[in-house]
Every structure is written in C-alpha cells, then in structure tokens.
Length: 417
Image (cartoon, rainbow, N blue to C red; front, side, top):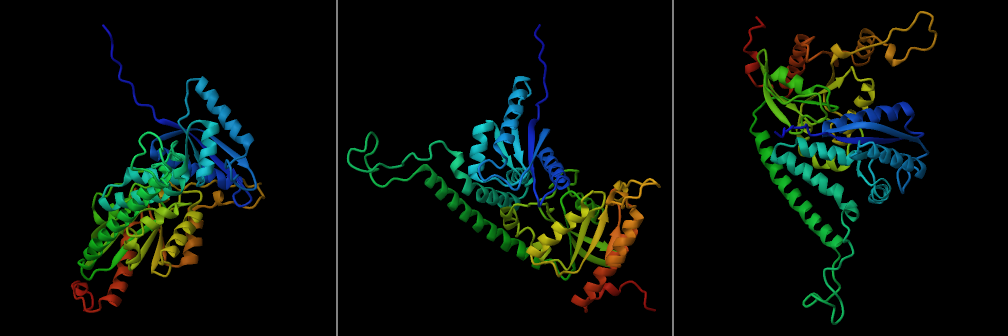
C-alpha cells in the first residue's frame, strides 16, 4: 500500500548583502544585517549566508563589485548543486532599476532590496482598509521608477505607423504606445485613485477624532519591536496584537484608559526603523496623524538592544520630519528584564565600552540627563509598572488642567480637604 507523507512547506532561503564604507564601519554593517535578517525572518525567509564588501560606496551598476558578485553567483551555483537552492538575495540598501536588472542577469535568482522587503512585510501585516490602501500606494510609488525590469515586452508598440502596417494594424496606425508607457499611465492613474481614497479615509478619521470629547491624547511611539503593543495591553487591559516580530502593529489602535480618576486616550502607532522608505513615510502620514495630534508622546525604547541609542536618534529624527519634535514627551526604557552586561576583568585597563555598563549606571546617566523625563520598566514582567502609572497620571493631569481647566471629573477624588 502506498504511503502518503505530508511534508512541511520549506521556507525560502535568502542571502544578505551589505557594504562596509567610510560612513558605515564593519560593526555598523553587522548591526544593519542583523536587522535585515530579522526583517527577512518576519517576512518568512531563512537567512543562510551573508556577504559584505569593503568599498568607497555602492557601485552604480551592480551595487557590489564584479568580483564580489561573481563570488555570490558561485555560492548560489554550489548550493544548487548540493540541492539547497537559494530563493533570493536581499541587499541592505535601496537598489535602482538598473542595479536590479544587472544583478539579476548575473545571479539568476530573485533580487530584493531593504525597501521591497519592508513593503512586503507591510502588505502582509495590513488589516484595515486604511493600512491596505497606504501600503498599496507605497508599493506603486516604489514600482513606478522600476517598471523597466518588470516586462520583457517593453518596446512592443500598441499601434503601427505608415500604410500597410502589417497584420492587425487596421485602426491602430499612428505613433503607437509602448507597453512601458501604458503600464506607467495605469500606475499613475492607480496612484491618483489611492490618494483620493486616502483623503476620504482621513476625513472619516478626523471626524472620529473630533467626537472623542475633551480627553488628553497620549501616543506610544518608538522603534519597531520595542514593546509598544505590550504596554498598550497592560495600560488599557485590551488585546492589541503583539509578538516578537518587526511591524507587528500597522494600524493605529486607540483605547480609552483610566488611571485613578483620570481618563485619557492612548494610541499605539506603527514602529519606525532605520532606512525607512520615504514612500512609506509619505503613505503612512495619515496613520501618524495620531502622533501629530497627541498631547503627550511616550517614546518607548528597548534598552536591551545593543544599539538602542541610535534607535532613539532614528525615532527623534522621524518625529522631527513629522513636525512633532516640540511636543511634551518622555522616554520609557522597556525590557529591563532582558538587559545584559559584561563585567570587566580587574586587570583590564582598556576604557569601558557600552557592553560593560550596568543597568544601574545607565539609569543614573539617563536620569541625570533627562531628570524625571524617563522611566525604566519591563512591560512583559510587569516591573516598575505602578511607578509608570503614577508618572503618566501626573503628566496627563498637568496637561488636562492646562487644556480643559473647567472639567470637573478631575476633582471627584476628595483630596483637598
């Protein structure tokens, strides 16, 4: 009797490629590739190999040099011979249409760049009509300058010129239109339609925000995968989707939260990331209206991440681009339960590095710099959450008294007798 074996679907395998330059040293390139691997994992791909090259800057023709490209091609061929086919090669920067076309000719496998990978994850994560429309708009904007590589029939004419233009030319004589031009026109029309649809969604959301009453708005902002949704669930006692993947949250979620006698609105927003595609920032500006209209920003930071200080800078620069840099804010250092450090040997006289700093030393440093504008918590293990609630209560109350001085629900608690 024949046995039927149900085999698991194998995940696509990927090779990562990055550059070491004057502006981006080896350590920084490793951190970027670590993040790129996390992005690939989130998208459902398994990284099997990394390639880096030390150069002055990316090649305009093939991103990496011809020698390095041949090395990658040989590795793919060897893996193919060993029956371990490589599904794709992912580059850590945005590639031009020319670069993608040239690289594909040599490697013969699917080529992705950081931008297309992020767009793929966004498309996978989008749930609401607004998020799906925003992602589709960003995808078309990304595709438009890269149309040339998508078709093999680019120069085929839609119409012929002259008399007797050949079979099927009746009624089609004229200057003609290439497939590329037709596709570009279709995409431009689609972009216009999506923009109109987003404007309609924005009007609906603006109306919703106006109907929320006289409540202070607090927005959770930060790098992707720092624990914003976990904090949201903790404070609002709701079930917002949260997992250890990049961009788990795309759709802004707003919940009413009450601390003691004080109600306020808490918004969980999409996370930021290094080298975030400009098209995505533009497309998601409507989603980030919650950030623009917030009265208080809680900037959540994963203190266990080795490069959390650069992540802080990425978020602050993005907020500056959104015109939110001057809003009242505080930093919430999350994941203190995951923080690790390495104690220096007594006879080690070299300067201490960031790996040798204890959590207490970090806390004292940041508290001295920001005074009471920062907190250290673990949302997952519920450490220092009572202090977190007290600080939020104090800050929201101050803002509420300034903005809505005649609201009387604040004074229901008898405390001034």
